[in-house]
Length: 200
Ligand SMILES: Cc1cc2nc3c(=O)[nH]c(=O)nc-3n(C[C@H](O)[C@H](O)[C@H](O)COP(=O)(O)O)c2cc1C
Image (cartoon, rainbow, N blue to C red; front, side, top):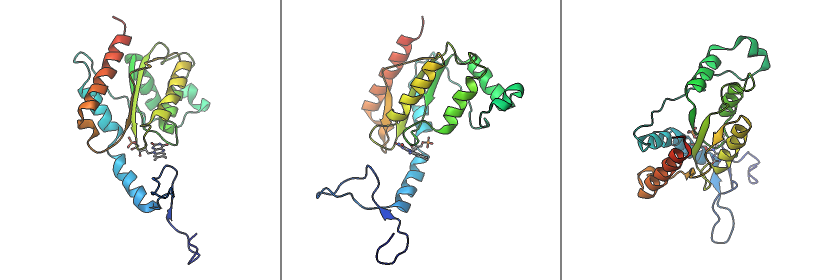
């Protein structure tokens, strides 16, 4: 509330906002911050995914497995799988090495990704078992989606997927970050780890 007018105010500090020299939180206008986030949304995971693919070993080939058409998982749909789920599960059977590139939503993965993992897990023992996976992502905060990335490690472990430990790509997003030499080094080390983890 705005104490002077009694009207709702859009100003305030958010957790993680910078502190001033006196230690107080800087005030943000939520509408401006929301606008900044909206602009960032167009930048992150797809650009990171494209960058990762561009630096991958030349004998690696990639397909994108769509998940956005999957309905919300329900036991009720098991007897008559929707076409999007059938296609998703076939893609998992055809691709035994998976690269997840995920944003962080409220310190976890987006619900759409968890929903896809749920679809792939049913019927139990199908689809994911025996896959190998690596996870990457970028976020707006300093942890670069690291908190989100911890969650699919746990889920995929339960689904009998072998998940690459290190090198990690947890990228705090900044303008131009994909053009830095350090980024190229990081991604090259990531792919070296992926190759080392694959069977001969
Ligand atoms: C519902 C929601 C929750 C979010 N939570 C976090 C968060 O916990 N940590 C973070 O770094 N960014 C968070 N963000 C910011 C997203 O990571 C950021 O918008 C990112 O660019 C989304 O990636 P995308 O454009 O590939 O969807 C959140 C965004 C949304 C929409």
